Image (cartoon, rainbow, N blue to C red; front, side, top):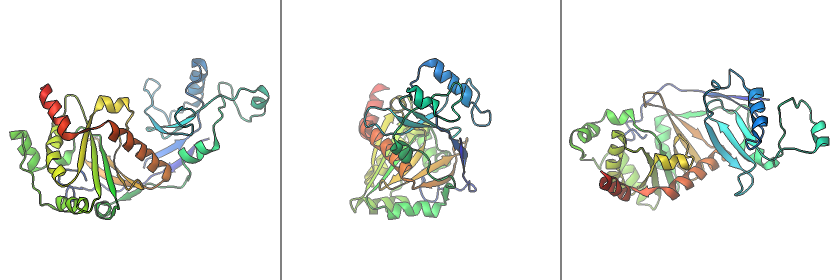
Length: 310
């Protein structure tokens, strides 16, 4: 059975007036799936059984799976994944094998395989509220998060470019000269400097392609300015991010309590920001932060290695 959650989308807005370099819904369903570790004929039969044209991409396209969480400590099974395209949830775990138990199951069709998972797995890592709607916040409320956080603001930047960056004088200066005379007294600088001076942490991990895009090099240059404000900025190569299964989502995490997911259109313009407070989602973002931060390199070291390789 599938559950449907309808998200709302607000009209586009620009965040340029807050973050000078561009830093400032969907209908989905979930359906419980059997173990991805089952032998091939069972998995093939199950995928054919559960294929729905309205929910799934063409069979030739691979699912874009996101790891939500596991209830088994470090062993990795059972676990919950989500198809980020369709919103379907895939649960895998050890199959139910007792013939008498299987015979008592209702509506188990040919090709389907039942799996056994702890109740806590579903409580912790699957959607809880069928009526929950995405909460879209405007630029003023988004800016307010940077004024009111208590101890940490952490960012994962995953994009190859930001359209708002390319509309700035500093970007044109960087393209023309390879360097930027960064302003240090704009509202963003004053806000971040005031927060870090109180001992609060503002941290970022930026994913970088090899070779880096112009936009990524621009932000690597920008890291000098932001670091002078008290930010701790680190970088990780995209190939390493993919190995770590870091998601494509671009987000801020505040106090390990709430997340602000930045949503962009196909032309790399910021469309809106979704505020997320659901505990399981916040934990998922915290897990992403821990993995990214552990493997990322301070921007000075990253820039030096990049310069040596050129």
